[in-house]
Image (tube, rainbow, N blue to C red):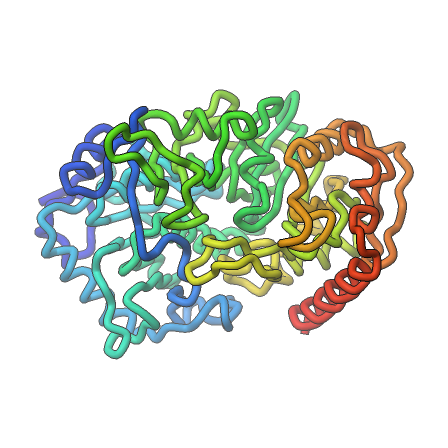
Amino acid sequence: MTSHRVPPELAEAQVLWNLRRAVLYEHAVQKGQGQLSHDGAIVINTVPYTGRSPKDKFVVREPQTADHIWWGEVNVPFEEDAYMRLRGRVLAYLQGQRTLYGQDVYAGAHPQHRIRVRMITESPVHALFARNMFLPLEGDHPVFAEYTILHAPYFKATPETDGTRSEAFIILHLGRKEVIIGGTAYAGEVKKSIFTALNYELPLRDVLSMHCSANYGQDKNDVSLFFGLSGTGKTTLSMDTERTIIGDDEHGWADDGVFNFEGGSYAKVIRLSAEHEPLIWQAVHRFGAILENVVVDPETRIVDFNDARYTENTRGSFPLSFLPNADLEGRGGHPKVVFFLSADAFGVLPPLAKLTPEQIRDYFLLGYTAKLAGTERGVKDPKATFSAAFGAPFLVHPPQRYADMLVDLVQRNGTEVWLLNTGWTGGPYGVGHRFPLPYTRAMVHAVQRGLLREVPMEREPYFGLYIPTHVPGVPDEVLKPWQTWQDQKAYEEKAAYLKKLFEEALAKIKA
């Protein structure tokens, strides 16, 4: 029994509340959920679900919220009666477990714009994940939650009777402020379900919710934002040893500046190296970190970050306190610079271009990148994709609402917006190669330090983008993608093709 508020169906369940990391580690190992690496991280495996399952995500259609929601492929409606039946089955399953784990956490570092989240799960390692990724609340709080997550990763739905598409499901009932997750142990579903909830709640409060990382320089008024989908470099570029990290994935932009939604990082760690990503490397090599779907030697317990036998989407979860340069308050001023990151698989976008006011809206609505292998279940080869606001899978309102808010904030605060291609040069994927990270970092630093304000710009012919003719530390010829291709005709064909894709995608989303 517990004094905490839980669904009545769980009133008799033994819920262990707000256990700390060491205890959750012990429970996870005892249950066989994972093993310790040689330096203290807990290594878990979530096969067959090693990425998000967007086709298994639903939003309950009910009168209170229905008119606000961008219904379609992203927000697939789920009938309320079916939700309540499945919810009842999940609760009965959880009631049958010997022990449950509860975590009371915040999402949002801003005191006026945070939401309170209560997670109840059968899995101690996922309780640890919630403790890592959100902002934990210490002490006993019988009445706490605004949003509740009922998490049953080892319960499998029956599509024929439950109305799901598979054994896995992630269903948000925004009216009840509740999420049920089952059939998948991929931890990212937990954090992204709450991000989706924030994408619903905050615009109603005139706060822009953003899929981006953020850091600042000498002071909190020197903020940079990095928008981009998984694999484009948000985490890598924001984890800058010369700057202070606010957060690496999800933020809000309010009237008094930006704030982190999370208290941790869920970084991609495939081919992680101490040389190129020293901060992440140090953070995942210690007690308290969770390593998801990485390969570990069964005898030495040494992790091999280069081994992708389970997935390319290997992940490391750790609290931001593991970073020496993190702002644990999670807040900064209004951004001076915004970067839109794209990993262009066609190899035709320039590595850096300054966007005009008209281009800001269009490129934000496009959210173009390459969807890299492993980020989502069933994706094996990179492919071009468009994701409105660089986060369409998590949007709730129509994309234009977020775009309007961003354009207004950028204009009011005099923020520069740049397109940053972290993808391929010298040809498309399979022919060319990825832009070297040191060049990308040099471009980011040049923009942040204002070194390009007097540099002449050249307008490229296909997308109308303005390219700087020189960036310190970067060869001039790399800045113009057509100069890196051996076959100029092939470049022109690819550029024309991508431009056509842009036009079609933009017309579709504006329709």
